[in-house]
Amino acid sequence: MSNTCIDMLEHPEYLEFKVSGDPTEEEWIALMHQIVQWIQSTGKTRVLLDGSGIESPVDSMIRYRMGIRTGETFGVGARIAALHPIWDDDNFWETVATNRGAIAKSGDDRSTLMQWLLSDQ
Image (cartoon, rainbow, N blue to C red; front, side):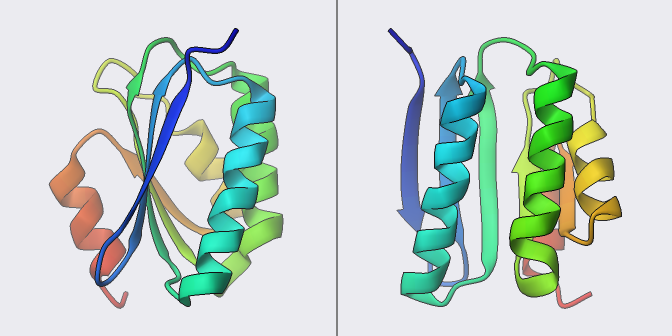
């Protein structure tokens, strides 16, 4: 049984998805589908994925595949910021997603990510 918890919050300017526990690749894929649905229903194209509550590092191949999916799914149609735990300084997902055409940024400092997410650059 999975210990993953995903909460969605709608803010005036962006959508926030809080992930905690130890998500499987299938749960990451399901989350991506949720994000697409919320973008379509709200029209909000700025997304904060708060993964600061993740308990263990995400496998590199999952990061790679999710980076590809992010680029293919969102491209330049959305701006995605991923907050990762402070103990995890791997930006591999960001690199792959950006190389696949996404507007994506990851980091462990929420305020820096929020500035980027809400900027027009």
